[in-house]
Amino acid sequence: MRSRPRDFIYTVDDLFFATTSYLHPEDRIIAFLRYIPDPEGERSRDGKRYSKVDSEGAYKFLKENYPTYLYEAENLGKIILAVPHELIEEILTPTRRLKEIIEEGPSDDLLEKVLIIADTFHEEASISYDDMGVSGSILPSLHDPENSDIDFVIYGLENHRKALETFAQLKDQGPFKSLSKDYWLKVYKKRIKDDTLSFKEFCWYEERKNNRGLVSGTLFDILATRNWDEIKGSWADTIYEPMGRIKIEARVYDAMAAFDNPATYKVEDVRILEGPMVDIDEVVSFTHTYAGQAREGEFIIAEGKLEKYTGVKNGYRVVVGTTREAFNEYIKLKNLQI
Image (cartoon, rainbow, N blue to C red; front, side, top):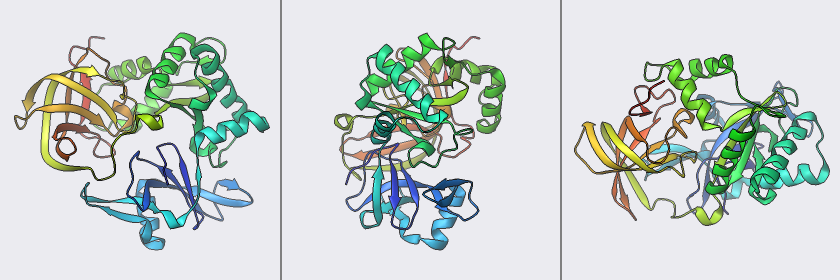
């Protein structure tokens, strides 16, 4: 079986997981629990009700009820969530869901807005409908037509970059709008729990990313997922070892995967500001805050956890976003003046 980020996995236990990795062990798919059966739940599907769970709730629920979904990943040195193949009822894919909406016609206003986004990127960015999809609560049909957001997926890193460029040109025209400062303030208070970024800095970065906006008043994200031919390697072909903290200054020479999972920046001309004197190859981020934070040719300062990786390739990387709040972990431009 194969699955990639933005897919959903529906299990024989009536659970919905979201795939979180491109690479998987031979007998299971790395995924995170999203929706559980709940008679009092706020979401409904096929006459049954479900609730959405957060990170803490997912681990607690599975530990108490379905521990078989807890997986000890030796190459990562921690327990993660994964779905054994024999427990998979169906793999839901964003491309198939979008195709259903196109062929059957939208059944509510939210799905109508999904088509507006798809048609726009097809016509204005020349992206094939086969390279687009819709994920999030819409994928398993657990969305609220009036309140849900749209997680719109673009397949292929080049296609995703074209989509961002197109949205940058079209926002504040027609159905597409930029987000207000009031919205960004809510996001800032939710994400930033220290003094690594001021609100002014945060807004500057987020507004230039062009990966989030409004379509006819509804929030939508433009998410990146690799095409199958862009996925390399195999599960556990690389071992990651924590090596403490590090702070560096570097030049980004490749940011094509800056919106991927994890967001990845290939760097050169690295100068170690704090920490061990090692050769850093890349900076990666596991938090949305630092996805798309820098572009090719820009100099950055990054602080986070140092990891040594060995296997098919050997080297060192800086990891930002190792905790949910990313305390004292960041990626910033060296000479930002706003």
